[in-house]
Length: 429
Image 1 (cartoon, helix red, strand yellow):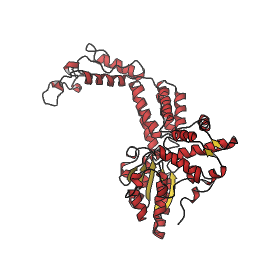
Image 2: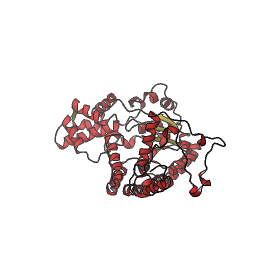
Image 3: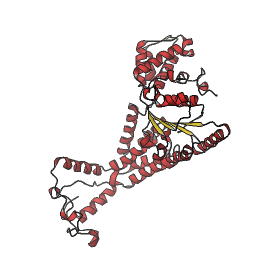
Image 4: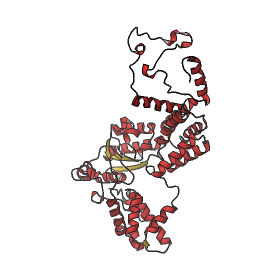
């Protein structure tokens, strides 16, 4: 049997790869999945091919390791792809080889797709028939809720297993094990002060891979200083020097999306496209960005330019059907359009006013002429000149209440003029 871990255990591999657990006895956390009598443990102990699985959990919690352990224990061939880099042509080639492997050698293939939530709908649809007929066993890893980011038809053919973040004590144990068991760290004769380890645990945010990456960076840093002890100041220095760092679940994620939204609202297309490209190139989920733009188009542009929402929604559709890298073009088009459009928040103001009344006022009954009954007295607008007739549409207790107040910006100015003309003598918009 080919060793699935062999390529990751050489000394040139990153520390996180060299220290990857090679058995369940070395695996930390996820007791609900790997503990006695658990789902994953039963599969490994029986050495039978697993069903298709989606591992859902935060970074560095063991998703990839579990896929490797399953393939190793069940003698399945493992093919690893990254959703950001793989296209339909590559997938079809993998499917053909998997079918041959099963036909001629009786061996199943596990297709492990990292960041599977980044697959667009077309790519996800390509997987379906091969998962369904057993040509491949799909194991996907995602940090996003798969019930929101994956097709329901694909989800229905997989078992979704949720992984939890590691405990801080687990991260501390992993660091101790690295200092003790890794050949390269041992040969460097570098020690890790307890205070420095505490900082690494804090900065890693319960992410084992992040913790080992920090430790490896710290070792490199102290070597460059001809030191043999990693101190707290070294960890602080390491983080001070790390630029363009992006954690899509951390503070920087919220900082960048906030800057992007405020740039569009502030009518600065240059800043809007800058923050958009920076987020995409840093690894942000493009669907999150596209959804935010659809909201932005309605929230900050609204009826001042109704095409803004059309452009934003079409950018979201283009992303689903085209995928990255090409989809960055329609996404940028939408961001620039929204930033350049006239602005109005009158729709949001209308919603807020309605909710205030729903919460605070005693609301009247539905007017008789608007009820779903015959001969109610309702006047059908299309029977009148201009397809309009003045009649009351609000409950009696709210007559005269103004919710929608169009601005004088863009197309909304025309809306305001038309409504004032229609309702002349009844109310002013």
